[in-house]
Image (tube, rainbow, N blue to C red; front, side, top):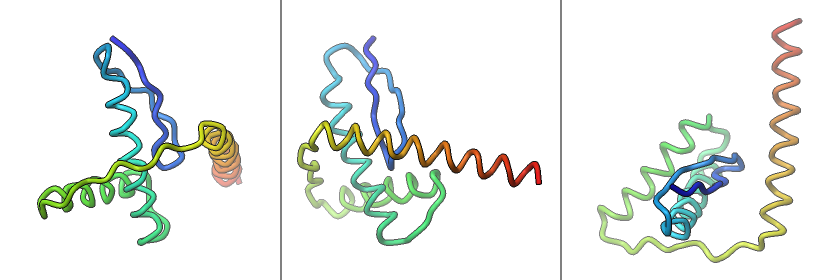
Length: 104
């Protein structure tokens, strides 16, 4: 069994898949990531679960309407890595602020 690391809405996820299906899983992850970012852009601040919910609904709407689901264009790996590092730093800052708020 293979494992793939996906970044969806700026958060990393490790997902298992069958050997040989890694590229399909990456493509599916990129599609969900694109839709989650679309949901965030259209609706503003959302919790992680609501952002993923709206991403799923946007994808389902396209399928129900019979519209072709377009795969996002390949991203520059260096840009993806840099974005991931920034997201991790922001998560760390948010965790620190939440902890400080709980202890106040």
